[in-house]
Length: 78
Image 1 (tube, one colour):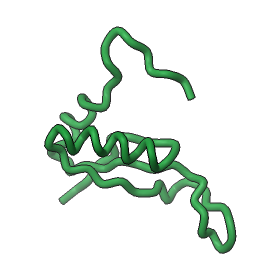
Image 2 (cartoon, helix red, strand yellow):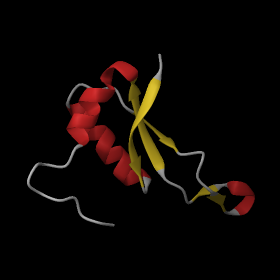
Image 3 (cartoon, one colour):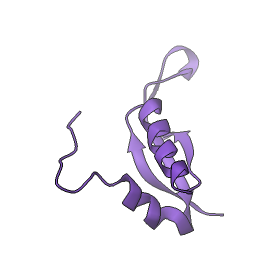
């Protein structure tokens, strides 16, 4: 099964929140650390990077629609 990224999150809490919203709508997400991002700490043990939410390819379109901000409101800037 091919997976695609539907959300980049600055931290694991944001990624798990997005994944929870997808699960509540019948989507099957998986949260993973973005290995392309930098690792810091002793022997690379502490992740300072971002996280990604992946879903099966056939669920990607629905997942992206669910994660869109509500119409008429702007997403807060970090």
